[in-house]
Length: 444
Image (cartoon, rainbow, N blue to C red):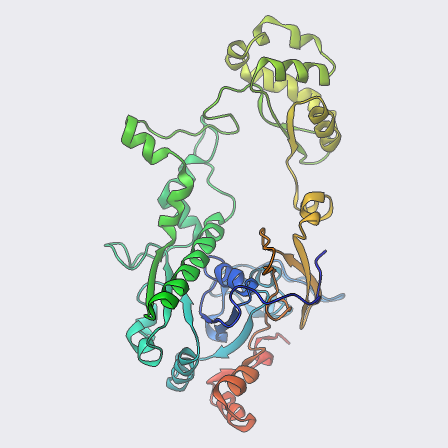
């Protein structure tokens, strides 16, 4: 596990304050990376407009608590959660941030937000392009309070363009870009992606855009507005499809588990002993084929003419996959991987989540899981960032060395430290429904 609360030197974004209006992963994942680089990230949310992630599975239950069903959605029922603060996904996306509950529908809430803008370096949001204007907080009003503000807007299709008003989530961006069409077996309907991977990809680009904008502001002294389209980001992952069309007028096609560019047979994932255990195997030339034959005991079928060369194996690939699958089905996935690799055959286990957490030595050696203290859940692991820096370490949980904030957990501290409000003034704002504290987000 990680190094916990051990002392770490200042990170590259120390001294940078970011107001985080993002939600889900495409935006919140970006501010997570910025916090890991030591930026002070203040997550702004309100109980009536909660992040979907707080309302969905999986949640961490205490012993004896009722395991009620949970469903993602804007209309999610908070009573189905043991607490809004114990969603595992939310905790994994938001470590190191501070949290303030602020009602931006009220004029007093807007004013408090603008006062925070005046003391911040950047504002990030991933609403629709006109949402902030409709809330009465257009960029022009923000710039009145902070003339050199960095403002990063990461909407579905971007602010510029005839489709800018279209709403989008990660799976929508995947479909618009063509990624959904490209995924699946060649003789079947597109399978799409089983998870919102574009939220991850977009998050990295939002973080990169923010750092670039902060650098430009430092160089010029001027404000920077960033208009980023999540759907456009997905085009980076479509490979050579657009280039192939422009150069060769060729349509993209699905290749399933087969090698799309270089002849290979066998090449696929094969069932192993146990429940839902699979092994990937790839053979690209005759030397590798001979190694495979030897590693699996040179069964009679490997000597047949129909498998004698790459051309023949490709012509009979379905039968080849079936016969190889009969061998793998009798093998433990990890043992088969090790024996094949030792013989010089390309092979790798299709790991489960349990494999990644409990058995992956490489991830442990790279400190991929970090244990952080959560105010309600206690000590809990989150995913670290997959990069290391020699002089300015980057680590999930920085700069607070704490897991994700509970709802409104730092409201009083932020209003007191940054805006100079007294305890009595903060209590009055709570009574008026302008700000909230942690108790508003916890189910009874």
